[in-house]
Image 1 (cartoon, rainbow, N blue to C red):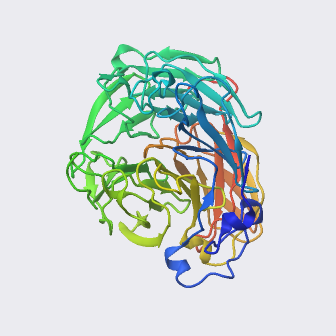
Image 2 (spheres, rainbow, N blue to C red):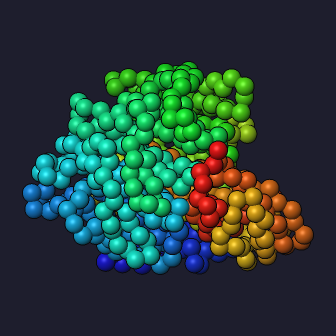
Image 3 (cartoon, helix red, strand yellow):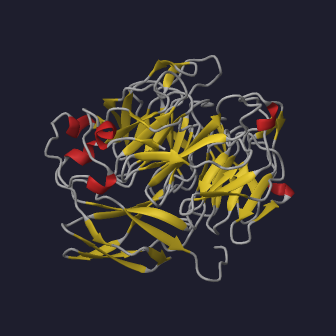
Length: 495
């Protein structure tokens, strides 16, 4: 176990405390922090978070490749980081398995599903040989269990949780020259894997950027220029609009609240071209959706990690301008979809290029980690956005632990609030995070008692655990409560 003290975690430049002790007000905030936010001092997490998953027990599961001699050691380095007390400990898989370069998502019951990855038997790290294995991590028992095998070996696949509670696994390759075009469907209720019909088969490349829309479709929006839609009900693909900039290799994509708009930014058009600072938005609520340029970033970057915040802004973390780690971009940028403008935020200390990761935490901060270079590759950093320096924080004093779809949820707060948002915990690796999605909830208020309406159907928010944020009129979020959205007992998939 790697213990990290509270003082080490917060550091001299930190602005908040751990989840359990985050102050309601930011008395120490400066005017500058209210404009650009603040990064904590780097802290040791005990491993490289190349893959990172936030879980409902306020822990982050993270893993990397096999360390040491690959002919002797056959297990990825796997750990958890506890947000409540700042401790990291091993979460060893316990059997021969290299989880590196796998897909990852969270199942409706909160377990973590890992699909594909790297063949540890090659004895060579990053040798581009995939596997058919899947594995499931239970955050309550801290135990790993092998799952059913995929239809093909997959290295660099993407996994997407669907409205019926199942997971689609697609893309990747068996090796460097052999793509994996089939699509697999994992059903956690029966613990079975099924290959989707031949109409779903399509070569999507390595780690395709995929996002679940709120109409039972999945959209692929990168890195190739042309977008394509997958209709889950019919298991068919249809061509979509092309990005105006062109291909965005090493570019970033994220779905805004409601999953009706997709933002993409950065990346480069070819393997030898310089990164771009351009950004585009696809508005799927229009009759004929088309990519449109929005405001440009201050700094062009590849390998940046986008994090959706509860106020519907997007934080762009890290990135580089030359190859994997060269000319690192340490200043974050914040995108406001209302104005279409980017604002330069505070700079972090550690290089976050290739293999960098980032996830939103329940206290409204962002954990940035990963990027396997330099002496601080085991270190994480915490970013406090400007909204944490705009006054006292509201507190959610009570909230339901679970809800059915379309059902009322009674929530109480200690001060008036104006907005409620559900955000699904992120599962990030290689700039791919399909699990990252959110939805604003309608509500009525009677003083400090609020009646929220859960999403009408799993099309808006697939079943599983969500962070429930309450925001006041200044956009200051309360520390989120975990709420589980549950399917009807019949388990019938939505139509």
